[in-house]
Structure formats: C-alpha cells, structure tokens
Image 1 (spheres, rainbow, N blue to C red):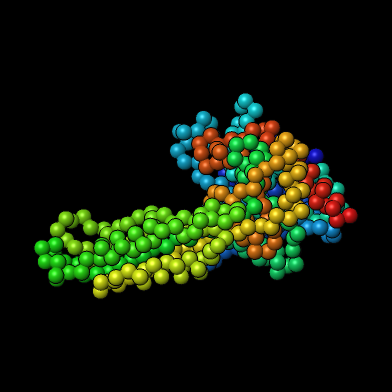
Image 2: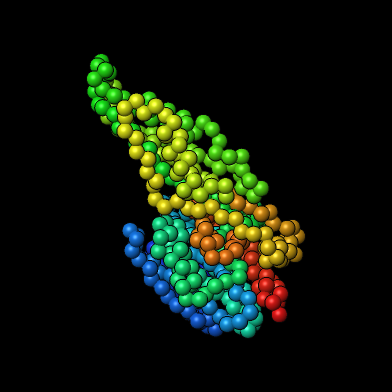
Length: 382
C-alpha cells in the first residue's frame, strides 16, 4: 500500500514552481512504475511558451477506462516571511500538513496514486495525465497531453481532475463544469491637441467612455440551469496622459468575461463588435483585440458515473455533494473536449496563500473516495 501522506510530503518537498519540475515528475514516475504502470515522460514546447514536462501513465488493457488528471506545478510562495516555516519543507501540526501545493493540488495526485495501490491491476484501465504547467501559461501542458493521448489511441470513458473542488468540508462539492474566460482590449485613437483648441483635436475619451458603458451596462444573460449569469468586468481604462491641458491621442480599455455555456469565444467576440459598431465613432479609429487564448466553458453530462461518485462521497461523508460550476478555469476544459470530466478534490480555502495546508484526515478520506469509486466504476463493466 502507498501512504498518501508520505507521498504528498515528498511531492511538497519538490519546489516545482511552474515550469520547474524539481523532481516531482520523476518521483511520480518511480512510484507509478512500482505499482505496475507503464510511464511516458513527454516534453512539449513552442507556441510562444516555455518547454514543459508532462507524465502519462497507464495500467491495464481492457475494461472501462478511467483517466485521472492533475498538475504538479505550484504558484510561487511569495514573501516567505509570511510563512510559519519553509513552504517546501512539509510540516505536520494539529492534524494538518502545511506546504506549498498541499491543497492545490499535489494532494489529489497523492490520494489517487495511493488509491490505485488498492485496485487490482486487471480491474480495468487506469490512466494518469500529469502536467507541470497549469498555474501559468497552460500551453504546453494538459491541452497537448490529452491531444497526444487521442493520437495514440488512449481514449477514456470518464475523467476526474483532482483539483480542490470542496468548498468547506471534504466532498461537499464537485465541479461538473467551469465557466469560460475571455479577455479583450479596445483601443480608440483620435487626434491629440490643446484643451483650449478642441476644434483642432479629436478627443477619443468620450468614445471610449461610451464603449465602456455599452459593454458593461446590460447583462449578457441570466444564467442557465447549472451556471450563473455571465459577467463582464472592466479591468482598466488608460490614456497615459499625465497632463491636464492636453487632449490625448488615444486610450484603451481592458475587460474580462466569465461566461457560461450559452456562449463561445466566437459568439462573445461577435457580441462585442456589435456593441462597438453601435457607438458613434466620431471620426476616431477603434481597434478590438482578443487578449491571449480564451478558456472554454464546459458542462459534463450528469451520467451514471457522476451519480456513482456522488453516492460514494455521500457514504464517506454523510452528505451528497453539490454540483458546482463556480470558480475560475482549470485544465478540465481541455479534457472535456475528449470525454466527460468532473473535478473532485480537497478543500481549497488555503490554496495560493501563505501557510497553505490540508487536513490529514481529509487526505485519507479522499483516498478512500477514489478507491471506492474505482471499484464501482470498474465493477460496473464486469
């Protein structure tokens, strides 16, 4: 048997700040090989981002196929003066394990690997897709890893991402979808001039203000059965003008939209262009740009597998989980393009904070949930 606490402690001791692996993938590869997994280390690079190490592991050749996905990379610890102890030296105190990555999300990986040790090798096919690039660019990580899986015949029937999905207590929530994220910029260019001679200039600010109002004054939608309403938030309006007697030449505004399954990045872009075109340009030039690569929204079907996971959680915790789509984005958005996926992990209230921690009892509870789910998932096919 694999002890999830021991494995998590060893993973935390790897300072794997994106994209530095710091031994985390090598540690997992050795652990999985000892459990009978075949492993492949993959490095993806290019597309304007840094090289990233990824790990794919599989055990079994028949039956149903279960994919577990996660990431070993962590965010920087910040000012270490705010930590009680070294963030990369795991510390046990009062039934909790402290260290960067304990909640987000090395605990999910440790629990799943430990659960695999309790499952017979011939039960079915277990796959693991582990990246070291979820917390930053997310370009050479999971998206390319699951594409590689598809190209190499590694399909799956159901996937679990071990992100910290629980809100306050273990298993009180699992994520069946995520909102998408869309960032954009609108630039308005006029003619610079002296404020005393406005007829010789063309002030872009009234046009910029009108666009800001048009984008933010009306709701995008009222939400769907499983998603809240999509929201657009203005994040900055800037003209770079330090002087009070100069009409600026140009100005920009930036915004972010967190959107539900009523929208795609293409339909959002079309909606934004419609709002801009409805504004009186007043002789200015307006340019709209999409910033970065939008994150997709997704919603997994409420299948028998989701019901099985919910029942297992209820037996372990005494309460069925809520189905949530709240929060930001995760790598599940890439996996959802190839099959049904949910997120199921520990409580995430301390993630990305100083003194990040998890309850040791919750770690063992999550391991039990994963193991029980796998027994039923594979047993259902026999």
